[in-house]
Image (cartoon, rainbow over all chains, first blue to last red; front, side):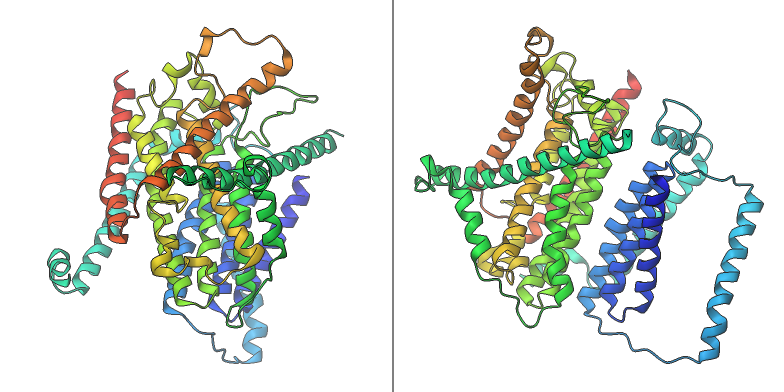
Length: 181
Length: 348
C-alpha cells in the first residue's frame, strides 16, 4: 500500500518537475511547482513525518507559491522565449547534472551518518509521543540557539523589506495619505 | 482483508458526508435567503414547496440547465481548473472534522469522522491556504480587469486574515497540547459549558478574533469586498456562468460551514452537550449515538445564523479599513492572546 502510494506520488513529483521545465508559460510553471511541493508533502507523510508534510503544504504550497503566482499575475509576464542551445551541451549536461547530484547526496548521507527511513513507520522510536511533541522538544532544547538566531534573521529580513519599500515611496506614508485625499 | 474493509468503510463515509455537506450547503443558501428576507421585512422564497423548502433543488436544476458560456479571451485550462479547485478545497477539509463520539464500529472504525489524524487542525488550515489558488486563478485566467481586481483583493484578504485566524487558534492548542481535533474536544468535555475553551479555557478574546477573521476568510459581509457589486460587477467570478458560477457559490457556503465546524470544535466543545455530567447519558443506543450529532449541528447552525444576521445588519468595510483592521488590530491582539495564555499556563 505504502509502496504503491510512494511510486504514485513520486511519479507526480517527477512529472510536475519535468512539466515545470518544459512549459513556456510562467504561471503553468508555477502551478507545476505547487504539484511538486504537495507530492513531496505526501512523500514526507509516507515516511511518518506528518508535521513536516503539513508544514510543507502550508508554508511552501500555501504561502510562498501564492506570492510567486501573484508576481507573475501582476507583472503579466509573457511567454518565455527559448534559445536553442547546442545539442552536445544538452547531451553532456543532463547526465553530468545527475552525476553531480548523486555524488552530493551520497556524500551528505555518508558524512552525516544518516540512516535509512522506512516507508510506513514513524520517524521516532518513542511510543505514544507524536511527531510534533518530539520535534518541539528537540527544537526548544538542543537546537534552541540556531532556532532563535534563524527567527532573528527573518525578523531582520522583514525590517529590511519594509525599509526598502518605504524608501521607494519618497515621503513618509502618513503625509502622503493625508495629502492624497 | 483489513485494508479492503477500511477502504470500503472510508468510501461509504466519504459518500455520506459529501451528500450531507452538499445538502447542508444548499439549505444554508435557503436559510440565508429566508433570514435576510425577514430582516428586510419581506418573506424570502416561499413558492416552491412548503415554506419554500424545495427552492434549493430548483436553484440547482436552474444552474445545471443554464447555457455555459466560456468567453474567448480566457486562458482555458486554468479557467476550467479554478472552480474545481475552489469547491474541492471547500469540501475536503470536512474530512478531518469529528461529528460525534468515537463510537467504535465493526473492525475499529470511527463512525463519525472520516479520518482521525494527529495534525487535523493543521490540515484544515493547509487546505484553506490551497483554496486561495481557486480564487486567484479564476480572476487571472478570466482576462478581465474586474475579475483580476476582485481576485487580487480576495487573495490579499485571505492571506492577511489567515494569519490572525491561525494565531487565534494557537491559544487553544497551547491549552490542549495537541493538534488532534478529537483530543481538543475531549479536553473541553468534562463539565459541559464551564470547561468549554471559550469560557473555562479563557479564550474569549481568541474566539472574538477567530470570529472576525472567519468572516474575512469566507469573503462574507462586512468583509465581502472581493465581490462588491457596485465596484467590481461581481468580482472574481464575473466571467463564470452556469454550473461553474454555482461551484464558486457552493465553495463559499462550504467554507462557511467548515469555519463554523472549526469554531464549534475549538471553542464551543464540539459534539459534547453544554450540560456536561449534569445530565445522565441516554440509555438508548441510537439516541446515545445521535445525540452528539444534534449538539454539533445545533452549534454550527448558531454560527451560520450569526453569519446571516451580521450580513443583514452591517454595511461593507472600505478596503483600507479592512487591511488596517486585520494587520494593526487583529494580529497584535492574537499575539497578545498567545503571550497571555502561555504566561497563564506557565504560572499554573
